[in-house]
Length: 203
Image (cartoon, rainbow, N blue to C red):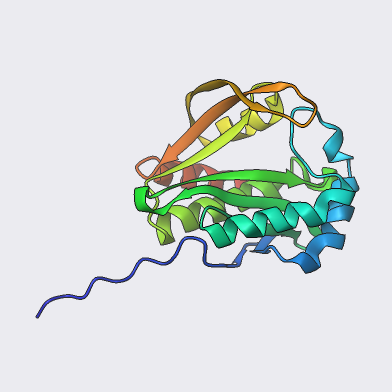
C-alpha cells in the first residue's frame, strides 16, 4: 500500500493565532477604525524610519495587504491585546511557498503595548505557525538600518544577521533606506522557541 502524501496547507490561508497576551486574527476591512485608533497612539506614522500608515491611509493599507494575500505573497493579521482591543498589525510577507521561506514584517503596535510581553508572544505564535505548521525552513526579518529599537528586538529573538541591502528602498519622504536582513532557520527555531518561552515566563 502506497502512503498518500499529506497535502501542505496553503501558506496564505487565513488563521487565528492566540495566546495569553495577544490574539492575531485575519485582517479585515472592518478593523479599520480600530487600526486608526491604534496608529494614533504614539503618532506612529511620524517616525521617519518606519512605514506606518497615517490614520487617513488605513483603508488603503488594508486593501494593499489583502491584495497581497490574494496574490499569494502575504498573510496579514490584526493584533488584539488581552482585553480584545485592536493594537496593531503584522504580516507574513514575501511568501515563497515553493522555497519554504517567508518574512515576518509590516509590524507596528500602539505605543501603550510596546515593550510588553505582547510582542514576544506574537513572535512566538507567528514563528511557531511558520515552522511547526507550514514547514518553513527559514523566516526573515527586515528593518531600517536606523531603526535601533527594531534591530535590538529582532536580535533579542535570536535571529542572525544575513546582511545589509544598501540603498534598498525609497521611502515616502524621498530618503533611501538601507535594509538590515536577519533570519531564523528551522534548525535554530527550537532554541529561539525556548528563549521566547523563558522570557514570557519571566514576564
